[in-house]
Length: 429
Image 1 (tube, rainbow, N blue to C red):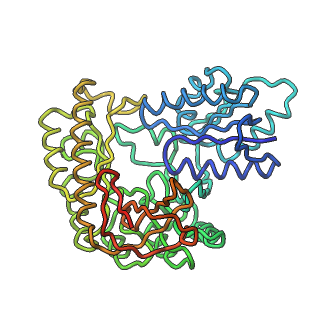
Image 2: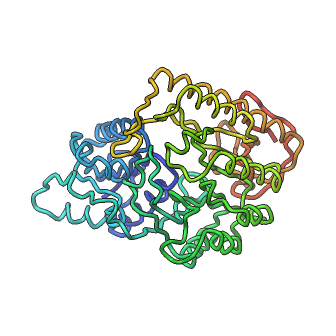
Image 3: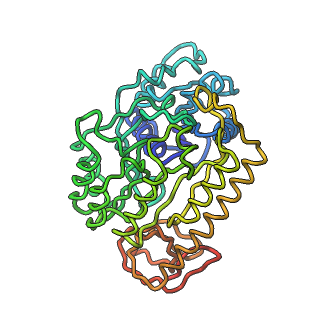
């Protein structure tokens, strides 16, 4: 038998899909690459209503491409709305977050049953009951590995449904995570991205902390680079920043959720900081690591974001020395406290605010690339080749294009950034 895997959403999902694949391999189920799989696993996302819609469309498309396959849907959308997923024609089994780690067992039970009763919608338990941490690591089609170090979130921000989809904050032990990183090194992996839902909160399950984790990982031999996927500003401590600045392995690349540059909106969101703290963190990074790439999450049009508050946020972001804004248009999520806020932003206004933020982001990213002209950086080239060219990223997340040289793939290579293609937003070396 063969299985095909489809992943939507975050890097954490990709790492978990890889672990699901290993579960099925243990049952003798091989990965299908040419179509017509016997089993299709769909790992879903539910961060916005657009994500929900994309999941539904993907499930229907996958079924049409694999009409005889067993369709198994898991992930955040399956956890939050199993009835809706189970109602999609062709779905055989819906498994929530708590069941994901034992997905192979559920599939085996389903296939052994004489009567293939549709089990969709009945295997997604309450997220608050999820207590186990399921380690996972994936390479995907690139040279980067995604290593899951933490799952769940205890923050319950007013706009976010992820705690209802992922459960409470939990993690693996430093010892076990280091072992997984060492296995990546044995496979020849050079770069590892640390993933999780709230990775700065690492350690609740094991009486450890994130600073201890990164210090331990820094000692792993033959892994050239670690990236931190995203970390809350209030958990990005000075000792973490100083360690990354002195480390030869942790990339000068930060992804920090801001969500709004208005203290009034931050309070409505239930965020655990004010904009002054965020500005201080960015300033500290710039002081310690001037060439660091800093990406910032921001939400446009959340409940309570008046025109005045949006203008305040936009001005704050214009003055903030960051390289990119990851812009999200606010989307209502069932069960969240944001639904209780009276002030609503119209769809037209949300769209306009998103456009302004995206335009600002484009300008900031181009300015950052321009600031790096003439500098020397180290790039790890990826396996993929397009038109005789290969691509890779520097530690501070600049895209590099070079003529293909197979001997340089998955190697740490020093390059001088002299030629910038502003149209493609990449350096040619």
